[in-house]
Length: 101
Image (cartoon, rainbow, N blue to C red; front, side, top):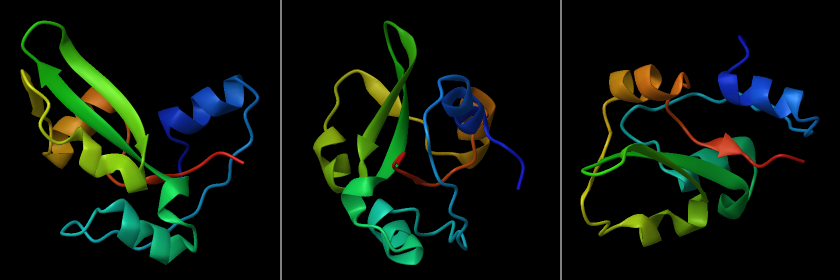
C-alpha cells in the first residue's frame, strides 16, 4: 500500500501508528462500520471532515468516529462529499483512519 500524506506527516513528527487495511464500501463510509471491520471501538476510528466555508475557504476537522454526529448543522459551510473533491483537496483516500498508537 502506498503511503498517504497523513502517514508521511505522522512519520515526520515521530508519531507511532498502525495501518489497517479493509474492504471499502463506497456506500457505507461510517466510522462505526470501519471500526467493526478493523476490530477497533468507534472512538478510535477518526473521520476527516472537509468543508468549504463562505469566508475562509477549505476547512478540515478530524473527529473521533463516535462524535461525527455533533458536526451536523454547521452554518456557512458545505461539506465536500464527492470522493474526487476529497482526494484533490486533501491528497487522502476517502474512509476513516485508525487512531495513532
